[in-house]
Figure (cartoon, rainbow, N blue to C red):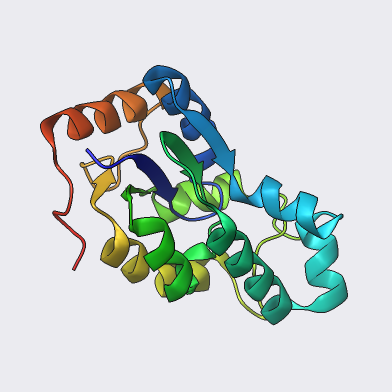
Length: 177
């Protein structure tokens, strides 16, 4: 097993929630890159996007990722982190990357605060558009995906258990190109 675990996936996939429980289970530290970024910016992610725009937000997000140097840590990334090849390469260097794949219908149900959450959503873009754009990137960078059964929405405990089992079985590098 690589030293840290990076959780990737769409906004609303549960990366932060799963990350906290996974970190406790492993005895690891936990970092939420959205919280780190918000603190660095001195404002909420949505305030920053509203004030400076999507491109500035994505650049600030990338800089946050590039500044992370950790070991024995579970890191929950922002949903748009996958758009930065430099970020993904940096985070991947010593980590196992886990894609939390939640069906689109469930994401739409969960994301009721889309206009205030700090999602890198361009004018006219929908969650469906983001999903279609990002899904191939999550798959590309992932060592493995949970849940393994496509279209399934497991509970928190089941997700953590599945991740732990895959880590134990050494199922890394299977999906990443």
